[in-house]
Image: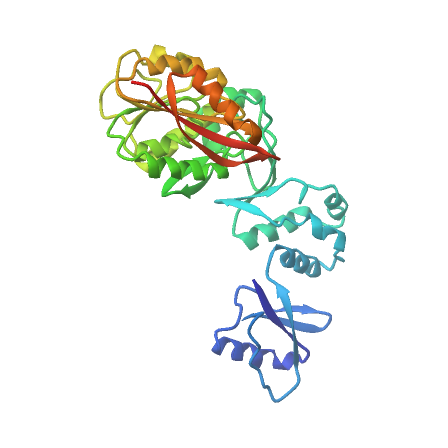
Length: 389
């Protein structure tokens, strides 16, 4: 949003102008009066499209248009510490971000670009990050980087925390065998999507904002699951598990990352779902059974015929390693079962991929949904199949 600022030449007039703005409800109380080169700057709430309705009896002000945004905040920070601002920095000021309370995530090659290293020799970088955190009303800042494809547990080891206490340093033991104390010491952030609360530890667990489209599709399309069974073979923190639970399903989850298991547990508590971790599957009031192990053990955990309404294969770039297990689960189902196959596929290969699936699974094709782009002409898609009964 663009607002006018008033530049006051005569300091004796500041109070009168400020009071007049306040009476009009046009005083920006979130911004303090600044002094630059002997002049005082008062920030208003007059937008760019509306004129400043002043006809004061003395010539004490001039006005200009400013951007009340991150770039403006950083420029004002430089003025405050009396350091010259280099225009080359503008292209490395983030233009997009994601806030997961109380953390903000910026893309790489912004505040982590090498050009800032020279700037941070001039002043304590913590002061700049503190100003940015105050502007966004967050306590933590991090730089987001992609997860490498061969990271089986989908741990965001490339995330770069730059401000705030993100907990203990990451090491192999902490990743694979965390204790309750480790969980308590870690930094956790959260968000609400489709009315579902989700929390996770960003140094140890991925979170894909783009999956919100698929989560909502599941919620809107597959309602009233009526305690039928759902298998989520790559549960994560409950990205899709929570949608199935909200629609009344009983979910069996498999997940290798212990930090995701902890997050899923916390998310079940936050959303009021009854869960058990690592316990035998029995027909009680438990809504989700969670296993910190490979989904190859699914048939060991579930050994009876039952109404299985959905099997979710949510691993990228490919879930092919769980297809054999999925076919075995299908044989236990007493009702037609939906399979949701996630995959990264080039747009020219959509039909070919559908054919591969239909050759492998005893199913009919129902739908192909494009979730988000992964690379030029490569899409994260979900193919819905339904078993033949």
